[in-house]
Length: 254
Length: 125
Image (cartoon, rainbow over all chains, first blue to last red):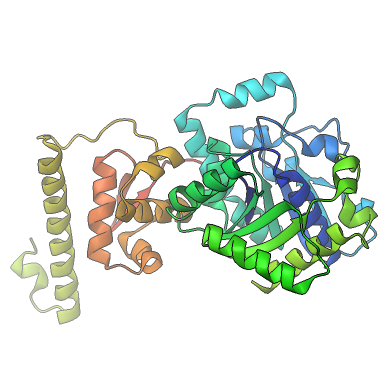
């Protein structure tokens, strides 16, 4: 189980989660992607699914089983891999309701997320379960972090992001003894220069005292696309897709 | 305590098992008494509602967090099962688990010789 998390918003968590899921699918894997950003759900609009009978909100409320929530979108990809998704309800009322949950509910939600290891990974035979989380110290995000085997931290060179991410590394992920990997997004560097890449990687490693899973340059066309399509699927030859494929390959070797 | 006529003539292993069981229960009671003394409480009544949510886990001392998280992951476990995961001694885990029960974060249920610890009884879908 992989949780994609960050200290600040806008670091590219959802972009990373979706493209990582598709990259793993292209490796022939069975992947489940869950939108745990209940405060700002975005997976439904990125994947252009407006309606579903059951949301992840329902699963965490205990009113339905996880198989009722999952939507199979594998037919969108001409590949032997599989991709099933679970969506957070984007309705304002649902967001308001989720932000008003008490500690006891959050405790049960943690139990339900932990049980996905058995119900999804083991019983339904998935290879990967990816949680796209909300930024910072939200209950739903920490629940996802506690449940995950690997936490991918999306970060940028923004000063406040670096400070906050460092704090989270020491005061959150370390406390829960989580395996953590950094993905530096929106970096200004020449991908073709090996020496520049190595120098930057060692700088990031020193900065966070944590392993670096990937460095994604700032691509104008990725920003311009605004999540309208999935790069890993539509533009496999794009450098962004290639870097995501490298990240997926590294994860496969872990 | 084990009565003499019950153990007389039975295999030594069985006798040792009974002794161990009695010692474990005695140890458990002592742990609870020590914990109650620490918290300044006199009765054995447990704290009613102390959900074991992630924020509570974050605020716990490291040694208790490790035990609590292991129970969260396993769902329901004995001290022996927890100690296999944490690689700490069973007696140490038993102490931490009972401490968490007294704090109201875990519940405990006895089934025969074994004591099971869990967060909350519910059907995990």
